[in-house]
Amino acid sequence: MNVADSRRLASALEQLGYEPTRQPTEADVIVLNTCVVRQSAEDKAIGRLSSLRPLKDHNPDLVINLMGCLIGVRGNQKILERFPWVDVVSAPSDPEPLLAYLGQRGAKTSSDAAYQQRNALLDGEIILPKAEQGTLVSAYIPIVYGCSHACTYCIIPLKRGIERSRPYAEILGEAHSLARQGVKEITLLGQIVDRYGLDLPNPTTLAMLLGDLHQIEGIQRIRFLTSHPNWMTDELLEAVQALPKVCPHIEVPIQAGDDDILRAMRRGYTSAAYRQLVAKIRERIPGVSIATDIIVGFPGETDAQFQNTYQLLDDLRMDVAHLARYSPRTGTFSERKMEDDVPDKVKMDRFRRLETLQEEIASEINARLLGKSVPVLFEEKKRGRWRGRTPTNKLVFVDSTEDLLGHERPVRIEWTGPWSMIGMLDSSPLG
Ligand code: SAH
Image: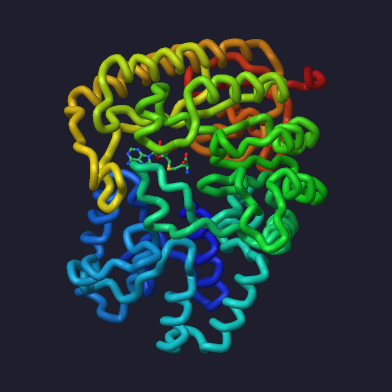
C-alpha cells in the first residue's frame, strides 16, 4: 500500500517539476512514508525520522513530509512535538497536504499546477515517475482504503480509517493508464480486498472488477491481496478460475489455528471453516498457490494452542506463510484489555518452529517444479541475473544476455529452494 502511495506522490511531485535524487543531502523535499503494523516497523520509521534532523539543520529550506501510519487519519500531535523538524504531515494514501504546502510556498510550482495535479489524481490517471517509465513491469493499485473489521490486535483500522472502496471507473482508469505505460501485471490491494465494492452506492464486487480489468489490452496478469476468509465468495473463486489473466494465487491469512485464539482475535471464523475454504479454493482453482499469515504469541496463547496452529500449517501445506510475533499496538483492543504475557523467548521459539516447518513445506512444493517448464514474467535484472515470477508467484532467477524485461517466457526449472528457484529459458513450447 505504501509503495503504491509513494509512487503516486512521486509522480505528482514530478508533474510539479521536481526530480528524484538518491542523495538526501541534495533533496529539496523528503517524504518519509511510514508503517506501524508492528513495533519493529514503527522503530524503523522513528529511526529514519531522527536521521533527517541534521539535514534540516543544514538546510532550513528543506521540506520534510511525514506520511502514513505514524500520522494516521486522526493525526499525531505527539510526533510533531517530538520531531519539530517535520514540516508537513499526511495520512496514509493522502498526497494532498504536501501538494497544498508546496503550492502555498510557491516553491517550484504554482497553486494552479498543484490544483490540476490534484484533479488528475482524482481521475485515477497516473503518470509513472520517470525512473519507472518503460521499466515498471508490475504495479500495485489500491482498490480499498482503510478497514472496518477491527481484529483485536490490529492497528490498521485506527491508522487508515474506515473501509472505503475506490470508485470502479477510477480503478479502471488507473489500470488503463498503467497498461499504456507498459505495465504488464497489476496487483489490486486492500486490507480486505475481497470486500471490494460492498460499500459503494451501486454495490459492485471484486469478481466484476476482475472481469473488466481482464479486458484491458496490455495487462497480462492480475493479482489481488489480501483476502479475508469470510468474504471469499464462490463468485470470486469462479472469476479467478475463469479469467486466464487472473493468477492462481490467493493470499488469505488464517492468523491462528486455534479456535479460542481466533475468537480472542475476533477473526470471525473457525479453523475448521478455514480448512474447508482452503479445500474449496484448491478444488475450484487447479494448481493454485495459497499464502497465509500467522501471528504467534497472541496474549494467552498456550503451548497446546500454538500446537493447533502448527498442526494446521502442517496439514494444509501452504505455498507461503508470512509469520509474525505478536506485537502490542497502542490503542488496539488486545493492547488495552489483554496482557502481552507470552515471553519473547517463547514467541521466538514458536516463530522458529513454524519457520522450519514452512521451509520444509515450501521446499517440497517447489521441488515438484524441477524439470518442468513454467511461464515467467521478467521484472528486473540484478547483478547479471533476471528475476521474474510464475503465475503462482514463485520467484525465478535466470541467467541470460537477452533483454527479457516485461516478457513472459517459458523457463525450465533446474534448481529449487524454499524461497526461490533457478531455471533456463526454454525454447520448446510450454508444457
Ligand atoms: N488486512 C490484512 C493484512 C494486515 S497487516 C489481514 O487482515 O489479513 C499484515 C499482517 O501483519 C497481518 O496479516 C498479521 O499477520 C500481521 N499483524 C498485524 N497486526 C499485528 C500485530 N499487532 N502483531 C503482530 N503481527 C501483526
